[in-house]
Structures are given as structure tokens and as C-alpha cells.
Length: 302
Image (cartoon, rainbow, N blue to C red; front, side, top):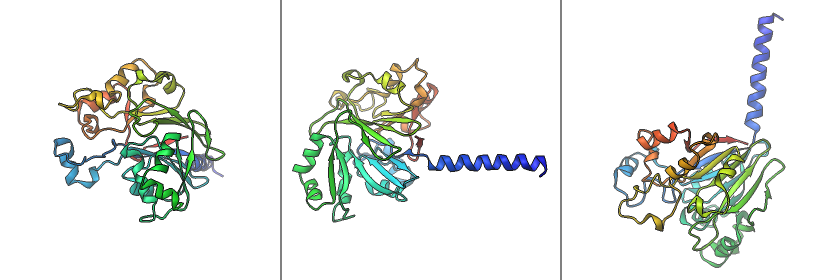
């Protein structure tokens, strides 16, 4: 064989092997980026939502991610949001093996209604929940009906106790401080064969947490962190202490000298957050400083 053709063949074969291996790697895919109410936000006629009302392509789904193993055609979704129907459809090539919940705020569990007899009529879909979250679902309607009709099967999980999903994937919940009116709040660490990802869509403030956020970020390959608000000026007239979240500018200050900045992706953005607009100074500052704003469809190879 001509040497030139042999080199070309070997190059193409190498690319084929790489593509095959990549496509079979487990990964996390982003299903939504917005705070609980999505964007546009109910009742919002401000500039941040005005264009979104008129253009469905600019609608933002509520924060959620899926863990996918292409080798076994399995998927697990973290948080059942109000956009659960379209988010589940995004990974419909795989069998839904379970739903992991972070907490009992409306954007994170109410999508479970789609598993009920009025919609999917699911059969014992595993729903993984912390003890208080589990009790909340078992003792309040309409969620208790999902259990009584065997649409869902509640699987109790515990703080810092690993759950083995399959031979290549595991997930570990960990408690974080938040407004825990009805349940605990957790973040998750997802471990694949090669890389790991941390998902913390909701937390009050980093300094209220007994864990060290810098150590957590440095110990993982990707970190999807609460970016609900950019700064304290975002909601004029509102007492921001009643809805505490770490401002994006606070997180950037913590990591301003860190070589791990590029592994941080902000998620769970409120409809008012100016960093949703790629033309804004706030968005440009985030990118300039080496951080990221997550987008629906982003894939993180594990």
C-alpha cells in the first residue's frame, strides 16, 4: 500500500476509534439552566422576559441535569422540574432508571406529577430522596398517590453515602444549607470511570456551609454551582436576605486566583440575571475572568 494512503488510513481509523470510545463514555448532559420559574417568568413583563415571551426558542428550562450511560442505554435525572416532560424527552433514547431530588422547592420536585396515572402512568420509577424529602412525599398529596399507585418507588438516600448506579457510575448526595422548610437540601457528586462532577444548584451562602467549597471544586473535574443572582442589585425593592444565594460575584472573588476557575459553570440562573444575556457586561466579565455560564445541551464527559 502506498505510504501516503497508509498514513491516511491509520489516521482515519484512529479518529474512528476515538469517536466510538467518546460516544460510549458516560456523561452528564444539561437539561435546563434557569431558576425554579424558568424564563420567561410568570408575571414578568420586564425587559429580561419581554423578548422571551414572543420567541419560544429563547425560553429557558428549569435547572436539571441527566446522567447518561450510552453503553447500557440508561439515564438518571437530577430534579423533576416543571419542565420534566421536555427534559425527559431530551434523553428518551435511554431507559429512565431513576430520579434524584435535591430538595422540596417547586422547581426541583413538582415534575413528578408527570409520572402519575394522568400522564405517564409510570411503574415504580425509583425516586431517590433524603429522609425528610421522602417523608414529605409520603405524607402529602398528590405525591402520596404516586406512591400508593406504584407510579414511583421512594428510595431513601443519606448524607455522604454513595449510591452505585451501575458498574461505571456512582452518585453521592451531600447536605448543603438552604431554606429547608419541607426537606433537607443536597448537592451531588457524580463519579464516572475517568472524571467527576459536582452539582450544587441551591445553597444559601458558601460561608454558611461547614465544607470548603474551594477544596470541593479542586477535588473534582467539573463544578456546576448556584448562580441564581449576579449581585445584590438584581432585585430592587426585594430583601435579598430572604432568598439567600451566593452571588456570582462572590463566587468569582473566592476563586479569583484559582487555577480551577475554568471548571466552574454557573447554573440555576434567575430570569433577572444579566449574565443570561451574552451581550451584557456581566456575562462578559464572567467569561473574561475564566468562569462559565452553563447552557442547555452542554455535555460533560465522565
